[in-house]
Image (tube, rainbow, N blue to C red; front, side, top):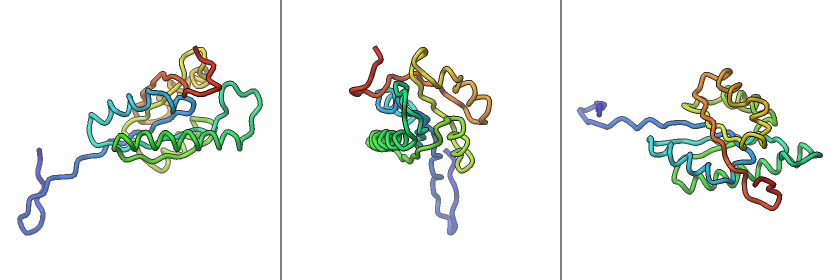
Length: 161
């Protein structure tokens, strides 16, 4: 371990670097993969998680309004921040554009991250996979992108086996 020398001969240890993670998810925020994935990263060192919830409609909604999508995204964000905060890590978050690529770009203009952790539903159910979001994000942004396939949040409208 390197030591930094302060004025008057005092020796202080340098602050541990904080690993910054951008978590991008919507329908999968309530599933167990969020805390499992966060736990893996927390074991790597001091961590900060910024949760980005694109305000997209639910997959099963044929008709939706922007207001309904925003309310649902805010509820999911609030629950995710609470769950991550319960792990004892620094957390922040926001609701972003319905287009996840635009939402990520907006955040990356203001903040930097060590990794983007992108949660999607499994193939066949994921709109984000149909639009090749993991590949597109990895090509567009100069940050490591990790793709996690996750279960949808449990609830009365979950239609996934």
